[in-house]
Image (cartoon, rainbow, N blue to C red):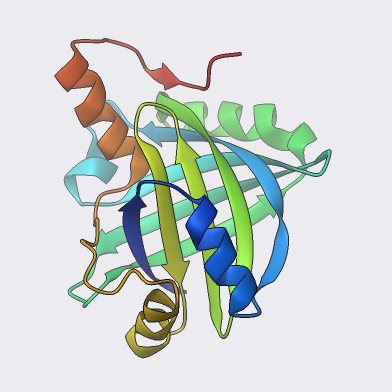
Length: 188
């Protein structure tokens, strides 16, 4: 499946929530997502512009896990890349990590984020809070026109689109701060 999305940094999510409500968007829920990224010792996936992510999501006391292979970014108006996913039981996470290890992959970075999920028109709208980085709006949809229409409704037309993933943004921020860690999470 081709994932097409726009990611925009915002100062606050409160105004975006108000605009979503006024536009008649459907609220789907709040979640905490823990994302772990894997690669082999030669960084084969990174070198080809791909990524392998294991996400554990807690949504209203229910947990689910999803293994995602993201392909290289494609030339597109917004961030676009092939994405293949497999959902599994959270109880299978250790087995999957063992299988990845057996294939020569190891976890090299993990982080958590808070996400509010909405649906507006034909698009999924995610309001993300990421430690060290702040708040973001991600709009994912079937095409550029649908995504752009939602961005306009949210008052974000003309805002800078960010093509980097949160993992890369976090790694850059940690480097800027002079902090060496492979795990970023909210203060408990």
